[in-house]
Image 1 (cartoon, rainbow, N blue to C red):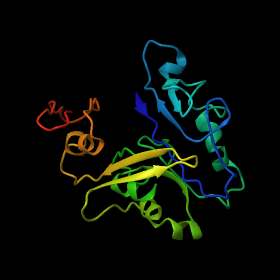
Image 2 (cartoon, rainbow, N blue to C red):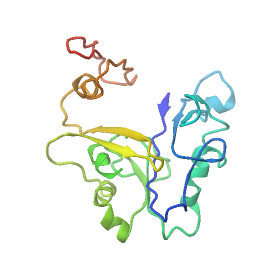
Image 3 (cartoon, rainbow, N blue to C red):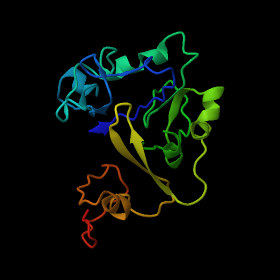
Length: 218
């Protein structure tokens, strides 16, 4: 599966915006994994428009309803405010490791995988944004991201806690290219206090062997 790296920073009066789940109802949070194009399958699968969906009440990953590009799905409904004519009270930043071909993404020479400071550790391909006036002043790290600026000194990694509106807690990990170690065996296993099973990106330069030399095995 390929993660859909599409994010939006939405800054407007409380209650004016919401995440919408696949059911069309507001949800606290959701995650979408876009599936790769599959040969020999139906048209939607061949075009890579199917996805997996997860939220606080879905009971785990399940097949997405409809297609990823549908305006009636979780992604389409949640991002509709970005495409309305009146967005003067809205700040947003969109990025993707494979942005639309018609867009002019920042950092187009690098592919990065994913809230401000964290994005300065990666190379997000920003293909659309609105961050002006008071928003730019309140979120200087996001302005740096738009300008293509990155961390310039140690530490080359950052871990922060993100809390949703309803109080769900997520831990975000980000590393810069100068981190100098494997992400999983060199950091995440110990940080999470757990053994990890890791699947490499199939186009990686090389496949590392399992590391069972530490307390937590990868």
